[in-house]
Image (tube, rainbow, N blue to C red; front, side, top):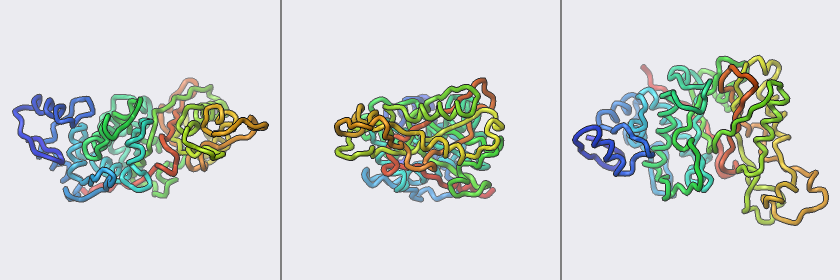
Length: 357
């Protein structure tokens, strides 16, 4: 017997069960693990959370998401039971008022939910934080991120062509989960910057576009100036909007995630705050540039070429991670733009409740 949040269905064998999952619209386009009653219960028992515990709701779609629904989708994604507390925490985070799931999950821009894992659990589960950071090959990254996508589709009704109105999309909408490489850097981990202790385990969710790779010579200013250029490019969600009306500044100021790898000693003498202090005032566009693409309405005025608008509200809105290969020839980073202005959807961090042994 295979079980989801809505019904129980009996099928003859595994292949038939997989095909029926396709027919019922439960997949993301790839085969799923049949969510048998026994397997779903195993996840619920591991987390030691009641099956009917409500983790949050999408009131606009009249949906409540409980532990059992999340467990069924985690099973289908191919998770191990040990991953389930991370999936629960990410689900709780994306159902908060601050994240405002209805906005990124229904936008035409194709936001995915990026899951960033910090703390001891990231090492216990071997979540990749190094080489091939956003690529394939790691079960924890792949299946935790995929579980969130299946939850969005099957429990939150973010179904492509229905409430998911994405025009283009990107591969992160299949799976999008990484960890920060906390132990090989002097930088303060993301979750500590966001108010948690270093020995707590957390997830941070972010309404994310695809990672935009940055390649630069291994010179500190060259790296940072290259990041500025990619983060400020016209055509991103933060530098282009046709709904500003008569405002004189863009309304789409939002957050970015920045992953920086390479040798940790490359940044000796610099903290994350130092990096953000350099980047924040430089991630901007001139009024002239913004008017040319109609991100700001109005006629071009004398001096517009020399007047600038910051695209990120505050330095802390640059979520900086030490992640990616610690070995690099040249230097590589990744800039990830938010799909939405900060007032519409912002990053949220929640603790992972690890069950006692």
